Amino acid sequence: MSEIEIYAHRGASGNALENTWQAFQLAHHLQVGIELDIQMTQDGIAVVYHDDQLNRLAGMRSDVYAMAYDSLRLLSIRKRFRRFGSHSIPLAYEVIHWAKRKNIPLNIELKSSVAKHPEGPEIVSALLEGAGNVQLSSFDAELLKKMKSLQPHIEVAWILKRAVQWNELGKYKDFDSYHFHKRYHKAKWLEPIAKMGKPVRLYGISGNERILRALHPSVKGIITDYPARVIALWTQQPQHHRQKTSQEQ
Image (cartoon, rainbow, N blue to C red; front, side, top):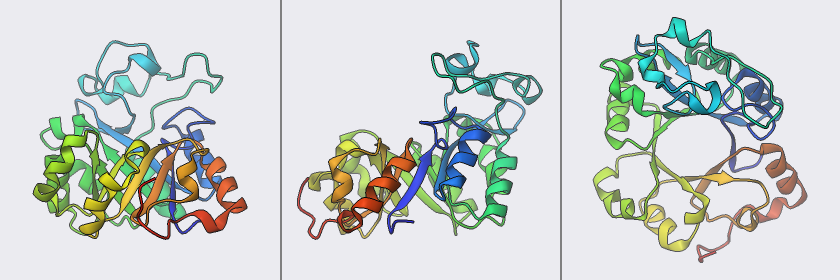
């Protein structure tokens, strides 16, 4: 594996339906980490699903958080126009337990329903007991602060989506790392975080970007739908993973 961590986005979602056992098993076969999303049902069951709504994959105009798990587990999910087949929504407990046994690094994004549920953070915290190589990420900085108080040893990463958030880094300097889209792979955005001594992970990577040949030294990992492409690129050009300087790309 590369010195830079590779995480399969929602599993190997370029080749299987996102956030399903098939996608996770493909990622494990490639010996990479897995990025996944946790949502909370109305009755406090943590499931692996990305969207707040069920419309895109299940064809229902309902929020995950509005559903009881007994109803949710009966749904079939699929992706229109992609021959990935039909699947069920995995239980977060089962995926995390499987990853523990297989020693698979996990990058878990906590969605808004986790914060909405009165016991959401505590429920997720209980699932993570005994977990090893796990990071928790979220757009919700206050949720991350809560998770850090519950699980001090687990790395938490704030997902930065807007340029204005860089002005708030000082307010959230206690976070362990920061995640953001590959378009911010420029010195203007990377250097303030590098000066804090904090690592970065980039998402939105497809595997054919020029930046993959010379990543900024602060980049610790990438999150990609196509981990096999990145592995192939870095196998061919292993000397180009890092910049020698922090110049702008």
